[in-house]
Image 1 (cartoon, rainbow, N blue to C red):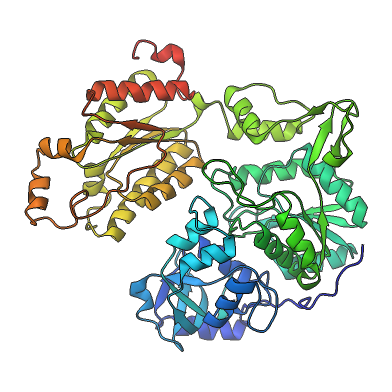
Image 2 (image 1 turned 60 degrees about the vertical axis):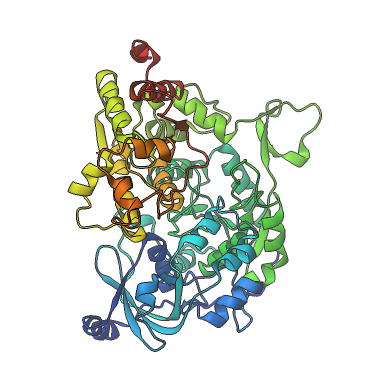
Length: 575
């Protein structure tokens, strides 16, 4: 298989020279600062180390419009995903073209200085529609596009340092480092494999066949930045990758981690991943079925199974490497091996195990067949995913003031403390306001920040296999979704909508808040002059107008028992 000519084979770091870094550090003392979020930190790392070559910084407006429209920069080079610095309207209003801004890591250090060339307010709905082919915000990339900062900044970057990493440091190599390693090893042909999931036997067989077909060595290049909500945390995944490396022939494969913020953009994403791997020095890139393809709320894929592979192969000459297309691998019991689905004969008995089946077996402690995965990988996943009655979980209440959230939450806490050996913590809305968010007001930004703080604390409790019960109003769907995605990576998440009608809530108004809101004394009160966005798909919806708080708590206990979070024997006397 021939390798296409590569117009971007030269890759340059955007980190300044040592002498210039000293000058920049002096300058940043007087510059306005923007505190980067996690998504932006991942983007800036790959800008600074050259993985996003040929970009020299965040896209300006002309480049952005061309990328959104037809996947090319203004100068004609292929680039399929917009890379912009999104900021708040308040901060954006202080910035003008020609301004210089210090971009700070969450830990406080300045990573780079941005010389702003462009500032504009994009049409984010258009961006979602043209880049991802949909405006359905169940698509992770669409959700990100529609909910990020409303002002975009573009311009050239001068880097002071790369973001610090404290885990798996020996596996984090930038493009220039990895290219040098390939040179030292004498590797001239390298086929890269993208993954965001643990590797099982089918994946290893696929990569071995790709190595044989291309006569190339393998770069196992998993993403350890933002992937898809619900994916296994990267700590467990990397331990799984390390476990499978001995199953490749000696000195034939390398493992390196990619701190990428995926957009889950299907076809465009596959092209983007190919460009990145070309920048890392690879000559081939594997694109299989459903590459970076998410599903909607009903489970329907946003893209066709071969769309990503077809577009990547069509553009491989511009990408700068060869696209190796692979179909689904299935296990033939009679042959005792994995084969491409197109080679299945009528006499073959095909064995399969879906991702849902795997999760159910892990949850229930059932056997996982040896033909599916490796013992070392199964052991790691069992450690990461114990049965549900040993996992941490969060019960997240949402509903109007006066709906009964706090009362039901307190009763639920008491019941769980009686029967569940895990520590139980109640994060009530009023109590959190007094102790964790006392300085916050009731603007939308402050309400969002309050819920994000609750979500962070709950995620830490869940991660450490405790039980968090959260009972805020949480009026906005997008913020509740952020909390769900944060917590679901560590354990269970049960959203309980206390759907008591507002008329009943007003009748119960012991604090007189609704009366003050109706009289205009309180402004921005949820349900009166500020919206409450009811959950569309909560795990439970309870109307306390028709049942007591005790009965409502019992319904939640029943649900936790049914989902396996509680031992049925322990809860029988409560339900």
